[in-house]
Image (cartoon, rainbow, N blue to C red; front, side, top):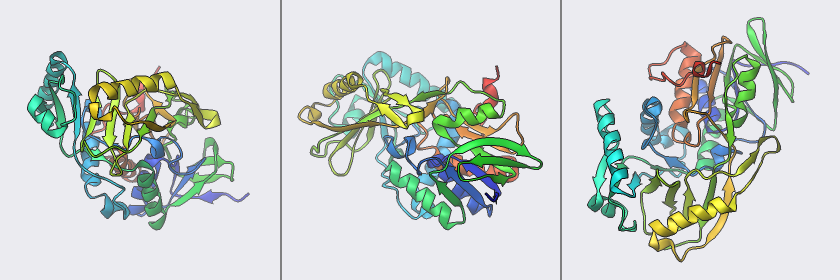
Length: 371
């Protein structure tokens, strides 16, 4: 079998891998992306589609803000609006005590120079989310946030990457990774590929690549569950999230409501399957029933889960390998990586091409998991 060559091999065809492949191609490099299934098969294609800056860890806020600017012009980048709509995200407080905690966070962010989170009282909460239960005293809003169609978005990045010169190989597994002189030799089920640089964007399988490089990470394989309701009359525009109880909640244009928030199925990553936990889904449905009386006549039509990676500190690994020159990591987005995809791909391409990035990604490096 002849050896294929490339400037960069990107392992993993989720949104992050496809975004990186596109941004590498836009820089004039020739990337080959290798995906064991098809682009968007796992978390990238089946997540809740939240495009939010709200309630993020401080270490990923710069990435999130940079991504928001790209989302607002997404059609310019990928030739598709990706179903993106911007009605804000609202974090609802269910008690005065919870609201006080939110106030402390917003004040702290302001001191650090971030103004995208805005504390709101009961009146503004009711104006933004009229259907919310009367017991809620307020919350936090990020007004530029919104939602998009995850599978359509991943496919749009894949398609534009190919148009710009990337090679996308689907249905092919990476079976090994080793240095071969001045290049990396990536062994695959379709023959070897050699390139001076490699990006590990393998999602829930990324720890196996890292382990081959002598930098094991405590990655946990998770499968966040989602469900969708029957159609109900339009009653909510923003995406709503809770922090005390697990909930993310948004109504689509067709009237159906997508309900998520972090309840987990049981993942079997080597079998590409998940087993739903109906008891937890019932808990999620109960939360919706209590918070939104307008949903009490709705029925649940379908539920599903996607396989992805969670890190112990719930923030991603983004940056160069510490053991292997020319390898870069981009994984572990811990159930909130969709919004970050556009900018993280741009940052990764910048790192690969120049060795540096102007965007602060301090705190996201793999070295934080050194034994």
